Amino acid sequence: MSVAVDPAYRHYPKHAAFRGVVEAGDATLKLYHLAAADAPVPDDVAGLCANWFVEQAPATLAAGDRGFVILHRCGADFYFLLVSVWRGSNEMWEAVWYRHGDMPAFAAFDAAYPSQTGVVRPTFCVWELGIVAHESTAWARYLASPRDDAACVRWLEDIVEGAV
Image 1 (cartoon, rainbow, N blue to C red):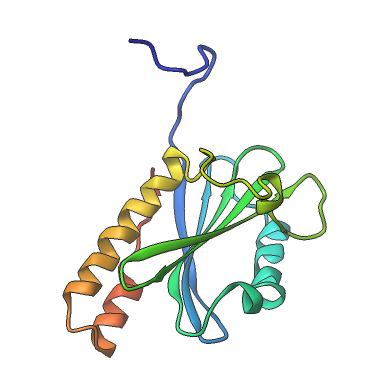
Image 2 (cartoon, rainbow, N blue to C red; image 1 turned 90 degrees about the horizontal axis):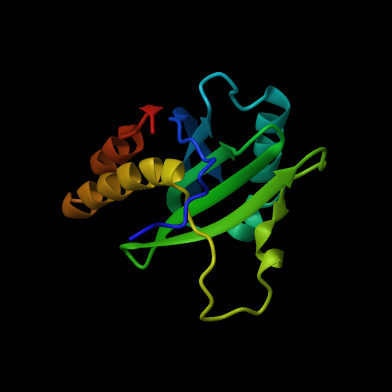
């Protein structure tokens, strides 16, 4: 049985780099950059990500949200900003933002799929899932803990870095 993969596609590892914990209002998020090892996220795009936390996070995040953000360099000039938070105790909720070319800021990606329900659409790519898998396991460890301040600190320190 064949799988629908472009014959010209050549897979390669990307690098997950933990960039710190970001406080946005009452939300706490781990920030990761994801890019090819030889083409990291440029400083100007990282700056636009920092601006997102100031300008967009207050309307996107709820008080008490905990989660992670992946700033993914997908090519020469396309980026995803994937904002994932844990809600309902064990559910991952996601908001997707993007930047292409010389856009002055990240824009919501939802506009690409207006009013579509029950339609298969993109979620995470194989590289992003490396980070998601780690964060899922880290959150499960937190859920199984006493969920006190010490456990929260252990969750914040439970990061992934390296090839994915």
